[in-house]
Length: 493
Image (cartoon, rainbow, N blue to C red; front, top):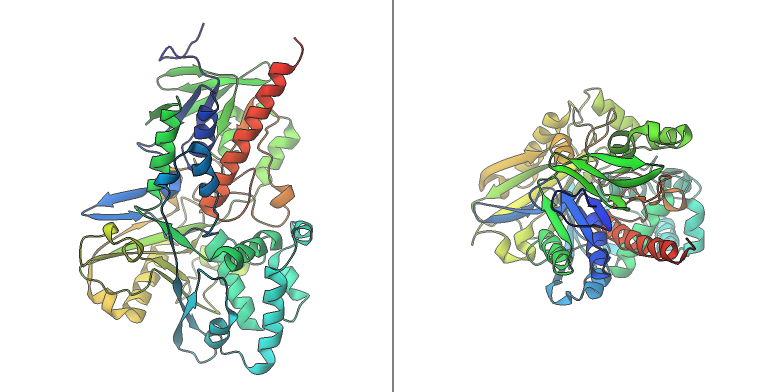
């Protein structure tokens, strides 16, 4: 007899309605799996929700889609039969704002929908003729790299890979900034395979994109498909414990009672799942030690600037200099209180994609910079101050039109998404498994050592940027669960 408080029988329970959780749930429900999705917040979408306030609609941090053409959402929406609700908006051009050898910030508008034309970058970087050929050679090697070669670089940092090539420093600086902005990782930790794969996607399928109604519109559509397929959604439902009996997952405990199912899929992050929701004593000590050893990605702290008039022309801005991106050494200095005078700034303007994202004649700028994932990080307020100072100096028209602002840091991200269970962990921008030795073929497996317990989202099962990675993981884990169920059903009693 079911012990579920709502009296329903479930085949699978999903913990967390981030991109991976809702994608997995919608596909399972469509396949006839009686699925319960438990979300601790009032809505699904995780870190990628779109919120509304005073007529503005915006994400909590700057977000764009990579790849722009053919992201994981496209096949997911097709498989769910909801293509009519998929409305991508391409990023035709981006403003790259760079302070290089001249000592002054300069701006170049680079095409995004047709790949990476290096000419504007070479001009922005002030490369002389002797530097352009080696820079073009390295870029070409990356964007043309075959998959079999990429697969050999899971255990090599991008820094180390570049050290074996002739790389003009402005190109190295750009790639270091890119590691910070695209994966929230330092160039001397990020896996070369992961970063090069993203650059290949940008070159082949465009460098960014957005959606009508914001990213939240995607999760509303997927969640609707989940419910329409027979799935059960319970929001404001925090899972306190994953129940393990006889070496297999049998359900979850919440404040409202125990929900049972032979399959539990966690979108709560591998470290919170193993170390808190299950308890490391339930695992082999070597696996628990492995989970503890996984290095969290960095965080991205944001400021939202609400303007009373239109002041920003472009949809995306990337502001950086050779001394503003962070490697491990610079990160440690900032954590010790040595905050640099300037920081990288990644900014999006949602209403420049979709005019309905702001009241007529107004704008919201979503700005962010790299930071520690630690919810208790002390440097966050100083980073906000640096962003404010740079906005006032580099974008005076926007600063003059400033009506109000609000901010978020890793503590807010952790509260919205994964619990803080280890020192320095919880407020990750993406997740775990993007550094050399922990991504690609070396990324955590979606199958946990406990039978019936799976992991989904940015920590397991896929790769690439943000929502694409998490959604692709959701699709792969759904197929894995369906294959495992079929195998069990066919197995002799």
